[in-house]
Each structure stands twice: as C-alpha cells, then as structure tokens.
Image 1 (cartoon, rainbow, N blue to C red):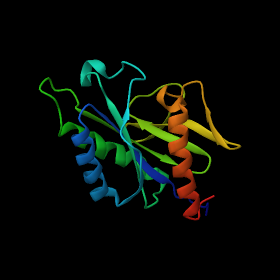
Image 2: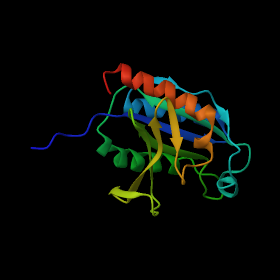
Image 3: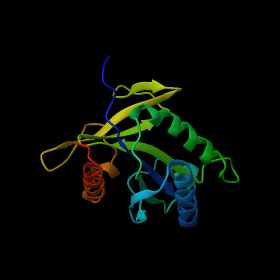
Image 4: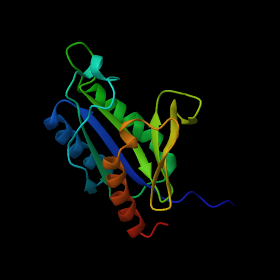
Length: 173
C-alpha cells in the first residue's frame, strides 16, 4: 500500500471592504476548522481591479491559519464550504461582500484552490482545481509565472514564512 500524503496547514484568505465581516467570518471559520495559531493583520488590498465591480473599492485582506493540520485532499470540500458561506453574505445586487479563498501550506509550497480551470491548474474534486502558487526554495518563496500579484509581495512572503515555521514546529518537514 502506498503511503498517504503528509498533513498540511490550512489557511483561508479573506477579502472584503467590511472589516467587521472579515472578523465575523474568521470566528465562523474557526468554529468549522478549529482554532487558529496565526492570523495576519488586516491589510489594504490594491493589487488588481479584478473584484472591484462585484465588491467595490477599498478592499482589505486577512489570512487565518489553522492549528489543526489536514489531509491535503480535504481542501476541495473546504472550498465548497467557503463558497456556501460567501453566498450567505451577498450584497443588494447579488454579488459577494466577501471572498474566502482556502489553501494550504507545507514546507515546500503554497497551494490555492479555485472553481476556475486554467492551464496551470489540476482538477482535484467536486469542480475544484488546485494550483501551486509559491514554492519555497533556499530561504524564501519563489514566484511562478502565474502567481497572483499580491502573492508576489514581501509582505505576503513574511506572513507565509512565519506560518511555515509554525507548520515545521508541528513536526512537519
């Protein structure tokens, strides 16, 4: 029998104009996935205009990293759960007020999940695709040709380096 995958550290990136909604859903996510062992500060998010039509300007970003490690195969179910949560908080035009993006971190990479297929994404399950967004090499993260603009910043590298150290402290290599 083949060995299973190593456990990974789940995180959710949250994007909204409404900081109180971000904080409310951070607590909701903890009720689903257990306590967090690291949270980023709420950061301004001005990297692209991709979400501006649906969600408006002045978006803020926060990452929540969960203490309990998961099987990486579970991340597609978690994406479906976050989609359902997003639907509970739609604006008057039916657009999202918050975007919830789960992913995971291990010693070598950061993986994000999406409902959208593309050349660099692989199908996981239930209409969900995964992509390696950053790879860890040497002492820092390395970007890839398709890495999102915000994930190319030193600010994010610092957040994910801290989360990686926590993960490694949980006995993961």
